[in-house]
Image 1 (cartoon, rainbow, N blue to C red):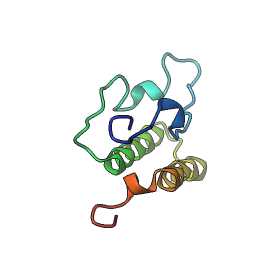
Image 2: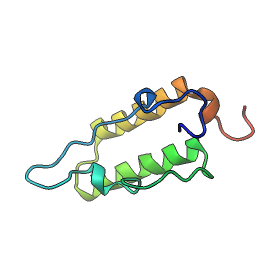
Image 3: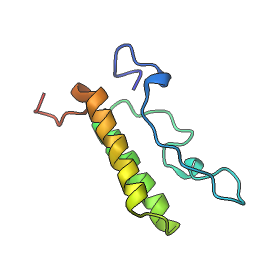
Length: 95
């Protein structure tokens, strides 16, 4: 977001912790499609958030853990991003 949002720093981001299964190496965060990747600046923040949410849902579903608590947490991540960064998360044409 830093490249698209003036004044944004990493500490301002809204995130959800993805716990590490035990025993294991690396945890769920390393399974995400964005782990270790450079951001694609041609994609809108709204579309990146949607992709990341779908990716997290997929990881939890594959592990049989996707349920109401995870769903609520992901919805909260979306809600907070829309609240804090509203002008960057509006649908195109709704600004």
